[in-house]
Image: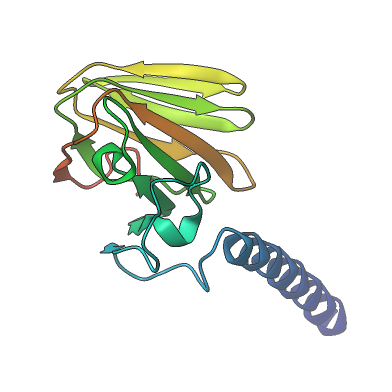
Length: 174
């Protein structure tokens, strides 16, 4: 009986280890060595040449929002956009940003995955592919409810965006 329990525990640990290693590989491919312990924003590693048409991650601000949103920010004014900023984000399973707002409207594009949102206190779940409209000034957050990381593109129609953190993500399961 004890051998069966030990074997079952080993198989469970092995499965969890493989799942974590797969997640780590995805996170590394996105340009992060690991999932950080706390939120941060880092300046770009390289200067962007405005004569180029390709903006690479090394040209972008890199950020992590606890509990589980990794990403890059293209603040439009830094890349010669007149009225556009873009966020490329990855949310790990049960990950997303804190509750926050922007001074302008935003939209999210997700090609696949299941994401729970809260926008102006309205909770809903979206299943990719989808586009979500977030009104200007609306408190919002999201949480990846799938088993694998998802990629989100956030588009903001101004070249100088604002970000106001309101508090922890209310969608966190306690």
